[in-house]
Amino acid sequence: MAFFLLFFCVSGLIMNHRDIVSGFEVSRKVLPPDYRIRNYNNGIIKGTVSMPEDSVLLFGNSGVWKSDRGLRNMRDFNAGLPDGVDNRNVRNMVRTHHGVLYCATQSGLYRHDGKKWTYVDLPDNEGRVSDVTLMPDSAGVVALSRSDVYVLDFRRNAEEFVKMPLKQAAGREKKVTLFKTVWNLHSGRLFGLPGVLFVDCMAVVIIFLCITGVVIFVLPYSIRRTMAAKVKSKAGSLKWNVKWHSRVGYWTIGITLIIAATGMCLRPPLMVPLVLCKTAPVPGTSLDSENPWYDCLRAIRWDSLHERWLLSTSEGFLSVDRYFAEAPHTFGSAVMPPVSPMGVNVFEQIAPGKWLIGSFSGMYVWEMNTGKVHDYFTGEAYLKKKPGPPITDNLVAGYSSHLKDEGIVVFDYYKGTEGLPPMPSVLAEQPMSLWNVAQEVHTGRIYNVIFGPVSVLYVFLAGLAFLFVLISGFKLVRRRRKR
Image (cartoon, rainbow, N blue to C red; front, top):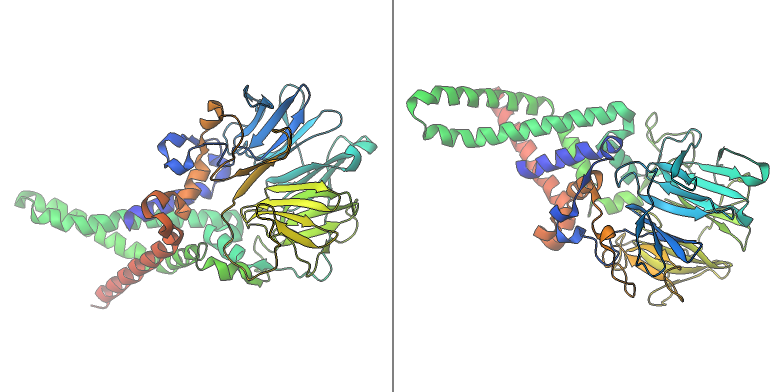
């Protein structure tokens, strides 16, 4: 268990400080084969923007690239963006009628001045930027963080974005999923920076328990095979490790049990009921925000049929007026396309009232005016059903209508796409961010090559084993103390 727990702790420390490690990268050559970029997979392309002179910009989780439509001449277009692929993870990009480019990235909103990208300040924004889109008739630009809407109105000759607070939707209660509460408790973010630092300290404690526990397990075997002259030194070392392993483990048992239990709840099978259960946010914590849409917003587009904004949120789709003055409207009991908890990756209006919605839950055509939804790949009608796995066989990671003369290109996260020219080596050689590698380790997905399908239950099974080690160790120490 010590081997796996050490990886849990180190990866957790990295994940808790994304801003600090965002500039660090890992070559995909040292990672399992599933993480190699082949056939435009692994989210290397999320979308495209058409440019003059038959060129196109491609964007995804490794930044922006410029090429001809035949993808034969791929050039780097990341000048001005921060170092590190994690900072260059582009969620969306738009081009105004004046030819100005805007892109929403993991590290913020950027504008291209013709030579390089420049950072655009969004008032009071402390989170990542989820999306960017154009206002109707290219009258301005709308940026979306995970909690707020920002508008740059060209008609008013505005030079800076203005925050447009979203009102609470009628009949909507201020609740969060139990999964989000447990997630924030596990990382310490539920209590802000002090909570994060406290959990970091507990990770160091668990590392200490792992190392001393291994020493206590191994050293007695070594002592039995050691010459008498050296036994005293090793016995003293064993005594020290037993003493501090027991003391530290005994006095931190409550917190380590909570960390183990909450970690188990963040992966199948325990995560499913937590996702379905909603509760009021814990008072006084980071989730108890005055903003009714705190950490809920994911994407935004203009609905030309109803002349309103269509918002994708962690709770489904919303509709709001052009100037964000009214409270958003929900779609009630209407059938809507399913969206993975990881968020929407394709959000395109292909005709008035007709939308293409793609995520790790698949891709669907949504006819808003008739209320019909059908699967893009099979054509079968989608009906509301009991909640199931959050992902499907079609993990839609991106979309483009600029790479073929007719039709569209869909990018699957694992399989990539077919029908395009061979992928340029400059894309295949893109590294993976250290934060994402840590996430793959922490969730157990990196062990697919070892455990296969069972790796889905890796965190749950490892959590059970960790709980057993903690409880049995506590009982042994308690028994010795009573004696």
